[in-house]
Image (tube, rainbow over all chains, first blue to last red; front, side, top):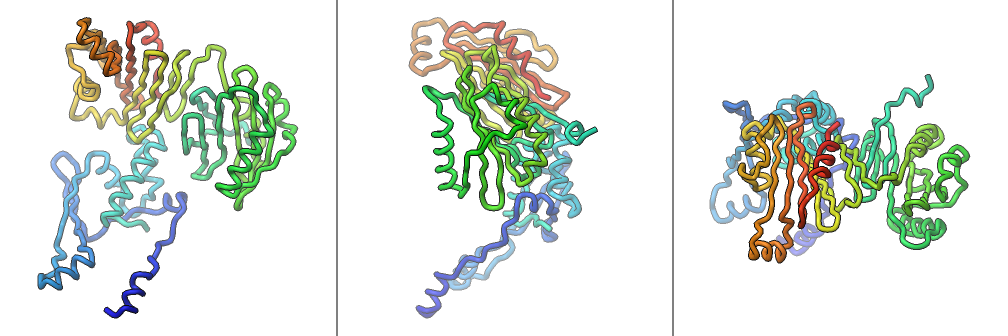
Length: 134
Length: 296
């Protein structure tokens, strides 16, 4: 890599995704990643298997040392009853706000409490690439 | 029927203050002596209060507020006459009104000082349509109280209600999804209110006794009365040996303890009152606190 290219790479600005207001993000609907697999366990809880993508620098390193890049890393996550309830509501039609309201009604918790629980859960699933928002 | 009478109202009581607000105004941020209320994720009202030692000057307080808010959030604050509609309502206080504006938003505020309880309270209403909501603001201000004759602390927030008698003061609070904890102290005693939700989920694999024992590190032998339905009560008294007393003193333990834990089926919650102290505890006081503690 030339010196110029290295400088350009180091000073390249990070691509930022557009920020949503809280109100906007509550109107979005979570959708499941089609590449994941779901399995309902005996007690009704959900087991999700999803792919973990290799970080680009690890993939490059593996190529340099002559090893083939393996994109088949999978991870499993088992949801508890509360997580499974929220998961079952993610049908691409229910918005985040609707999921929060249904969760609050079902478990008789304060709406704010339901909002914090559900949004944190959606954030975790989103970070792992298990769901997206539309 | 006018618009104001169609609105449903809710009561909020928190650490010394209480007021009524429209039901769709939710507490968005809570501090020891601070509340920010939101409607549909937009802030609509802010209230901050504190006891004042010594003399109180509206001029100084507003000048300080103006300088801090201008510096931190680009908000400009200016004194203004108290709106006529509010004058009668706030006549029990030393009051000063102000208006403020920031990036794309403005509002009106009041700084109140009560001579009886020495509390100063800052109330700010957000929004560019203040005039339209004037009736709502009037009702909120009419309902506002910053003290009560019994000097007790009323709690009515996030679905829990409690009455804590004088001289207990709120020391810390935790409101997390599924778990609330409020701690009050007075001299050598401590009262902690707990609330867990959802009970149907938490008690699926364990019964109330197992849940309670694991949470508080207690044993069935500490139960002070036979288990009755969904209520458990523990009573712990210290070991009177010299070594035990010395250990408790060094470790600053509160050796006397009453604990009552019960399941509220109506609101799918588990509530607990934990009272601890260095000396013998008052069982009547403990009973009263438990009876006044509920979900709504």
